[in-house]
Figure: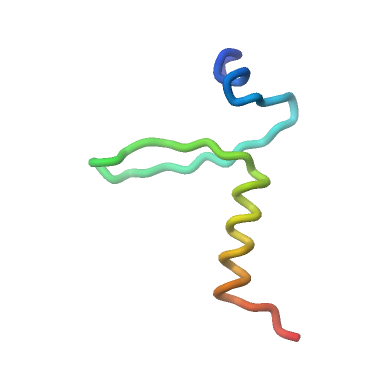
Length: 54
């Protein structure tokens, strides 16, 4: 990733990103989000649809 982009996004060495893609011709593009944010969001969805058994 170019230095200017890393600076803009305040990325530091060791930071990890999730790369998401949209293949829809009308909205085609990619998104980069911090891995921690992606994992937190997906965990909340998983917990909603698949609650842990007690």
